[in-house]
Image: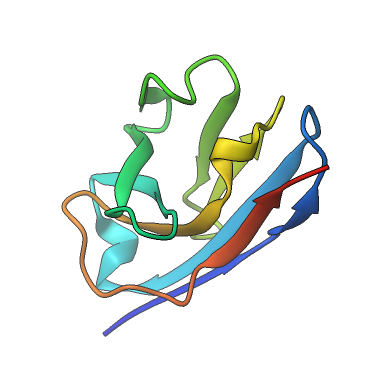
Length: 113
């Protein structure tokens, strides 16, 4: 059984920052690659950041240089630090393994003046 609980979303002005957390449990805790996905209204869900072996990371071009993913295996928690947020970052953010398994509820991030 997989459980994913995302938190930390909210409303922020352009240029602002947010920190997302994801507590995960079950078989996904052993996943080699974990990632943050997002889905904006009318768009498909996309993988924006992934991490493996603790320090290896990969980012989509749209967030590179602004977002930082990290993982605490001892706490079974995944993090996403988001800086210099833009209106186009507005979406529901989800954590999951890559490839993805069962989805959590996600956390809403809204970037607006």
